[in-house]
Image (cartoon, rainbow, N blue to C red; front, top):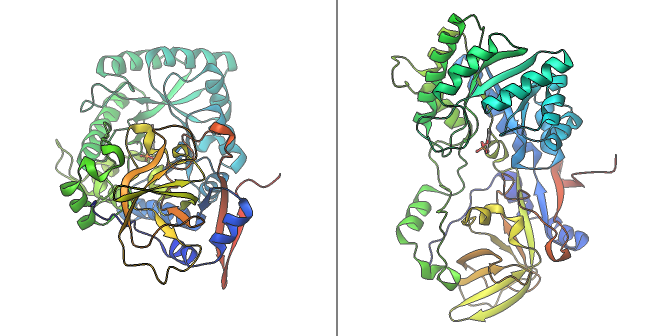
Length: 447
Ligand SMILES: Cc1ncc(COP(=O)(O)O)c(C=O)c1O
């Protein structure tokens, strides 16, 4: 039997799980839905800003918009004074619509289209240049508009030399020569690392601070280093995660499924704003003082682009159990949606925290569980499972029960969503506490 992986929950989630509103929404919306909890987003934003204040470091938080398409989080980011990391024209448009000012945008992503560059220059956005040919196109766009383009040079992390993003050392040198004479105004350097390593981020940040010093000596007044995103989210407890990792076997999954992509590290001792605190407190290699002091001494601003971490506890996803089929020693549940609303399958992986059953009726007479069950989608695809793992539910799942996947706001909800089979896309419902009850509205109300 697979280990249990109970998900951490915030107080609003716990309140909602015990509230009749959830079944009411299921009934009223007639399909799967995502619950968005913007108060949790606000708290995460305040925590990131608080870390900069506490460390006495000039910093800027850019919410990585790609992590969730909801309007409410973009609006809350604008109100909290965050910038926004956008990687497409659609995201840029949404950011402006939410109230983020052009100068507070950071445009990332590879080989940005000329149209995106044009709008970014007109808006006064900061543009993370990913390649030399992109720098040439940015230069041409800025000249044509007779404007200065604000830019960072994104570097290829030496620890991740096979990344397809960023400029290597030779390209950075070539870029600095070109920028000296151009319509591009360089403000600094950036990187984004895969994984969640604190030390790698502190080391590379300090390397880029030293690069800022050398670039200033060339007459370019750079003052910013962006360390990208990759602030972990702590989904499950340390002990549960250790047990899962030690005991997990293919037979714990439907059809003995193995995942080529491995799993997200669902437990993380330094997560979210605490990870930023740890990065600032780390003494980078080649330095004698913590990164915070390295930045202060060099008068360099630290930019961060968290996506997932700003959405920690800011939402969950609700499906309705549509069928229960018994197999040898476990059940196959079918829910009224698909794995495209739980995007981890994209990475040949699985969203592992245990979903919760919210029963439609009391199970007073059911013998004590567990009732291991995997979770299939309402589609014709053999491989469309939301959960291959045989979750040990404490009660027998029944048709009409709600199945709640917790803490899904960061990337899970909509990165892969598709109306395959003409299934409706799950609606997004914003829920907030109001005195003695919860109030809700759809994320996108008619304008
Ligand atoms: C350039 C860049 N910045 C920020 C992020 C956000 O990362 P995370 O959601 O892990 O914080 C990403 C994610 O892919 C990215 O590519």
